[in-house]
Amino acid sequence: MSTEEKSLNFIEQIIEEDLKKGLPQDKLRFRFPPEPNGYLHVGHASAICLNFGLGIDYNAPVNLRFDDTNPSKEEQEFVDAIKRDVEWLGFQWDKECYASDYFQQLYDWAVELIKKDKAYVDSQTSEEMAIQKGTPTTPGTDSPYRNRSIAENLDLFERMKQGEFEKGTHVLRAKISMNANNMLMRDPIIYRIMHAHHHRTGNDWCIYPMYDWAHGESDYLEQVSHSFCTLEFLPHRELYDWFLNQIYEDSKVRPKQREFARRNLSHTVVSKRKLLQLVTEGHVTGWDDPRMSTISGMRRRGITATAIRNFAKTIGIAKRENLIDVSLLDFCVREDLNKVAPRVMAVLDPVKLVITNYPEGQEEWLEAENNPEEEVMTYRKVPFSKELYIEREDFQEEAHKKFFRLSLGTEVRLKNAYIIKGESVIKDADGNIIEIHCTYDVDSKSGSGTEASKRKVKGTIHWVSIPHAIEAEIRVYDRLFTHENPDGNKEVDFKEYINPNSLEVITGYLEPSLQSAKELDHFQFQRLGYFCVDKDSTPEKLVFNKTVGLRDTWAKVSVQ
Image (tube, rainbow, N blue to C red):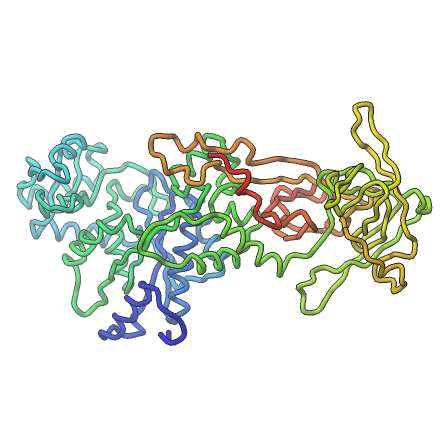
């Protein structure tokens, strides 16, 4: 990377300094190390873009490593979902790795620690260990088992491995210091007993390494040069380095852990524990519910990989945590979809419009442009007939001066079609308008080249021909949480802020070109917003998700 090309963020500055100090360029290797205990969310998306982006910028390999050290919470489903998300975001890893690949080596190193009197088997209960660990302001006290003999520790650890003991009866702890200022350095647990089936190693192991022990050593085994993680791991760095010191050989690359700030998104939660709660308690339909902050949920909603990458690039990398307004993500989505989404016509709150002077039984197929942003313009045909649907809000019986849509006695252009004039309405017994009657100017068809077709009127509205309309289920989404920071008040359960109106399901009417639309196809419903085809959609019943509106309307709706 040339430092002249752009200003470097502090992560890139760290790499540049290491290169200047002698780290060979070909020794650069990065990694993205998710735990397969849930689906990835928007915070992970930023980390993915960071690590794989560094790989692209420095022409360096990037590993995808699953830190699968807790079989009670991990599943193959999560592994598959993570791989799918990374690929969908547009990245490819060099090696697919698993901490479980290194279980034997991690065990062997733990045995070496015992032999060097740097680890011991502790037989206290978890409650006893918590008490003797002390507090941030008071030192801890040694475990009564801290001075077990090396021989006894080796014997107990081997028997733990063989499955002789119940969960919770013993743990292996590193022998560091019970007086350390950093609580994580007070003889941390390295191994615990777990009689649980692992999604890759089956029942081969009855003990599993703790994350802190496995993570840095896995980086070392893979010869990762830089281990970037979020700020909550800053206190862990001292332990990360202590563990590496026990095994490091001068001839190899020593991984360097550095931390960046988590980028929280407003009106969302990004804790996997809380996301799991939303799923298991039925507040959402699953991990890929379009209201979720998961990558799979955003993809299903219609947010593009390009928009997420641009969002990650826009918010950048920082040393301090802050709350990013979700409207910035919406902006990135609109910016991308504006370029790539075909324009189509759909009516979501229909009222019937009858053109009284249009010939009975006649239909026309009019030309409509697909996307004005295209370099080479393409067109499609849309059917026109005597009876149409228009949006109810596009008509007012008696309009105010600034209403430039259809009203009685005024003219408006039907998009890609004719100029019409409101003449009368039909109402039901409750006074609701159920039908609008109008006349059309036969010579005013768009693009026909006549003087009448060039006539200017102040408003243009969209429409759908009733005989040709396709009925579809439209899922309209709002923020899942009414509060911009549902995690911000620790005294209030975050679920108290769940938006009861986060999903509205309505019936819409679409132009027939959408009949062949496939899952995740994106469209701009003209004047309404961007929508995509949901996975529930079938040829018999089309289902569309609203991705984002044409402009930000949430600010005026937000409730604290």
